[in-house]
Each structure stands twice: as structure tokens, then as C-alpha cells.
Length: 262
Image 1: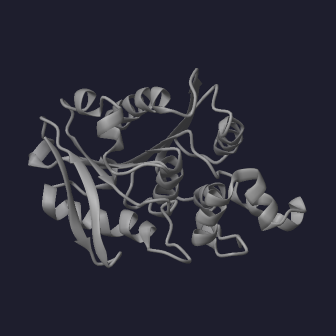
Image 2: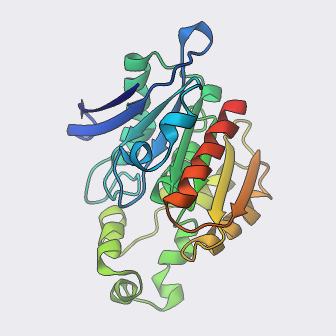
């Protein structure tokens, strides 16, 4: 079953869109496990249903797949905008537990995403390890936030970054971080991982990136090298592919199979 619709979010103080895939199988005790599937910066809640074969390869599983819509927010509680992190990490799981008979045990709750959604998935899992037991992220950007936005160390200005990355993207970052792109440790994925290194409760994590992803391959390799030192149940994979749906589709199928296997 595929459901697409809107509901009123008290956190966002507006109606927001969500897409939901309900498979044929049902888990033990009649409850379903849950996967929160996060879209990329140019996307929307229905992308994975429209551009991958999600409805085919997830049909015989037991996980309900919940796909929120967050615009170009980077899944953050924005400086100038809405509290999308709180909405996805805290509010949406509560809503879905009531509506869809979801098992809220952390071991049966995953978060997955591609591109900006991969960044969001890692942030959510590393910030709420008591709620999300596993995470898969592919082709993720901004995995070295302190380095990317340390303008003084890089001898750069905000205007120079606009020339490098485009004005639209820098305006998105300013909406999240403020005009001066001030460092926010809550958005620093490697720092969040280091903060959990000695914790008893940590999410299982898998990341992946395409060998032809000129944007983010180096970033993902560097993140993987650090994660290998931090004591997580962690794995990294790369194969031929770019930053596109031809890579995201197989990556999603692998991620859901891995998450279901526990």
C-alpha cells in the first residue's frame, strides 16, 4: 500500500507532506518495524517511490517506510526557518507509532537517506541513539562541517563561497547556520560520532558512495576512515556510480536488506 498525504505538525506549525509505503508482511505481535527514509536537497517525500523500485523490493518485508518532506533544510532546526530536525527525529516517530502500529524499539527503527538525506540520517541516528538502532547513508555531503565552513582558516569570505558553490546553496546554509555560517556542533556528523565513541548504546551504521561521485567521494572516504577508529558497528562500501538515482536505487535496496537482517 502506498499512502501520500498531509498532516498538521505542531512542531512546524503547518501542514506537511509525508509518503508512506506499507508492505505485505507484518512483524511479530502484529507490529511493524519502521524505516524513516530521507530525501535529498532537490527532492520531496515521494522521490523514492517515483525514482526507485522501493515498492517492489520492500513489498515482502515487514518494515513500514516513512518519507517526510523537509524542503532544503538539511534536516536542521534552522536559524531562519523551521525546526525540521525536531520534526523528523522526535515528532514524526510519535505520530507514526500511533497511526501505523509501529514498534518503537530502537532495534526495529532505522533511518536512511541519500545525499542531503544521508547527512540528515546520520545526524538523526547519532543524536538519538536511544530511538534509532540503525542508519544507512549514501552519497552524503557536509561530513566535515567544521573544515568546510571555517572561513578564517581557509582565508575565505561568504561571498567567495558563493562563487565556489553557488548563491542558492550558500543561502540554504545561511538559513540553517546564520549569515556568518557560524559553526554548530549539533550539525557536525564526525563530532557527533566521536561523542558517542565510548557510549554503550550506539546505532549500527553503513555508508556508501559512488566511485564517480565527484562531489562527495573524498568526504565519504575520510569519514569512513575516522568511523573505523570509533568502535561502532560500521561498514563502508563503494562501487561504480555517480550522484544520481542509478546509484541511489541499488544503495537503498542494499540498505533495507542490511537493516532488516539486524
